[in-house]
Length: 157
Image 1: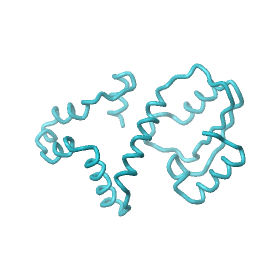
Image 2: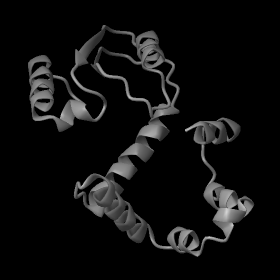
Image 3: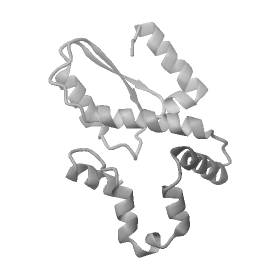
Image 4: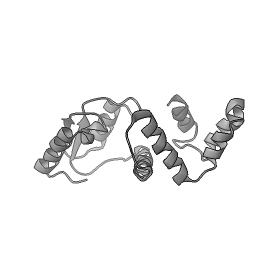
C-alpha cells in the first residue's frame, strides 16, 4: 500500500504501465524467477484464473475469474473517480457510509465525507450502514437493510 501510494504521488495520481516490470528488473530474486515472468507475460484472462485458484487454495472459497476481472474493472473506475476534483455538486447527497473501517482504501473516511459535504450545494445527509465497504452488501442481513434504505429514501445512483 505504501509503495502504491508513493508511486501515485510521484505520477500525478497514476500508476505508470511498466511499474511492475521495473520493480522486477531491479530485484535480483524476482528477476530470476521464471514463474513470475511467465505470470507477468501471460494474458489478463490467465492471470485472473491464477488469482481465482490462489483465492480458492487460501480461503476454500470458489470465485470465478470473470467475477474477479469485473471487480477489478470496477475498482479501476473507482480509483479514476477518486481523482476527480469537482468544484461543486448541484443537488442533494445522501451518503451511505459503512460503519466499519476498511484498512486498504486510500481515502480517509472523514476526509471523504468532508469533501462531499464541502462541494454539496444542497442537503448533505450521512446514513450509517452496517458492515464495511464489502460486507455491507455481502451479508444478506446488511444487504436487505441497505436495500430498504435505498427504497425508502428513493435514492438514485
